Image 1 (tube, rainbow, N blue to C red):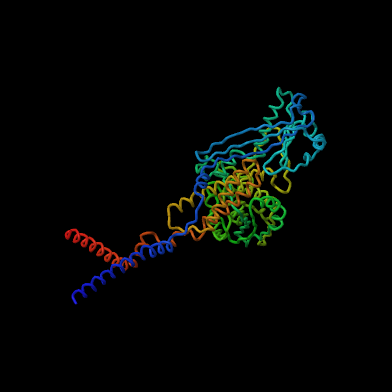
Image 2: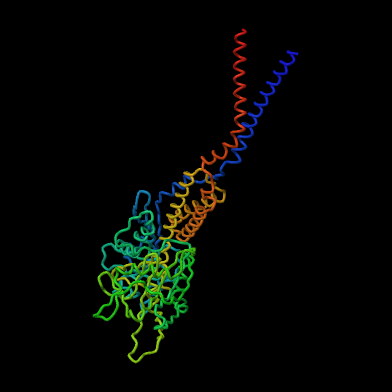
Length: 554
């Protein structure tokens, strides 16, 4: 009986050992991998190295220029050299991670018979009719006419067209006409193509320090769309019954300009009339002129009180450009704006960078016999729109360009914007878009590397790859002079990078940090792990004791 009981004890111990080993094996081989797999964070791969390369932006901007010589513009020996090509380069280092290099690919050739016929016409009273030629965005065509040509008035040495073409008069008596023409070409290029100042302004986010006095030039940042709001402020409707034909003015003066700008971004326009909306600043009475004055120091305090009445722009998807026409109340009329020097502003208006503009519209004083109120006031929309359109150009970064001496600029007509001005805007917006994409993707990559438990879904990774690919394509297209293609690629890069950066799945607050994970899983696994670990420790201890007993018996 004792032997049978001992055998049963040994069998029970062996069964307990095998059970403990089985539980431990299942927990290690099956349980741990299954738990690890079901609780791991899904993180799709991202192009971290390519994003790091985008952080260093060395822009290569190529401008194709075609120089066409009319018959007699060059001496015979130099004319025989045509056609030929020339390349010029100008580098603008901005900081260790950003630089801009402009490449001007200049091709010289003779005029075709059709071009000769157009260039041989005598100038009339109107604009010069240049040869019809389709040129891609970002490129220029410059015609060189003989010194004795009657295409331009004799006192005019340069004619800047509203499209992508210009005419220059070959200098008379130059020692080397080609060198002299090359200097004129540089002057035309500074007017009709991008400048170092415009590109530097587009990269202001990568260079936060602005030059003193340039704050007024800050345009709206590049965006996929804009909303323009025209507001009429009538603080004294009991005295003034103001009427403005804003719909007709938008149709006649604003829409032709926006028609061209819509190739850059989506633009919507609306209008409103606000009654009893005052400026919030008490103007100063000027006794000598019997008028009221708004000094330059008061202008910054005008916007905030007025903005509260305009409606919140927080609900808007795009930046809002505000244009306010203010009709002073009868007790503060006439009202004039003065600059820092105390001089009256001719337009009686001012603009705030990246916000909009305000114009004060004074009503003609009533006659002594006039006693009926409110007086009907018809706003001169031509005068108002001249101011608002000039402010609109400034807010979009379309700054006036100084012309060389002897240069004449073709009238832009009702469009209010030349084709080469639109190209200048495209150059700046494309560079700004690429720089914004690089900043967004770099910030996103740093965030995802720092917080390891954020889920990176496949669609987010796809947007990141698309943004990187589009940004690289934009840089490549800029380098070969395909401006329109580069701009479209930069817009795609902006959209993809913003979708990835603002994806809801990247909210790290939705996920537990590691210490909270331990606090959750330890109460679950510890009761199960303690018996298994104690059994394994007992098995190891008994194995050691049996090994020592066998050694003593030997």
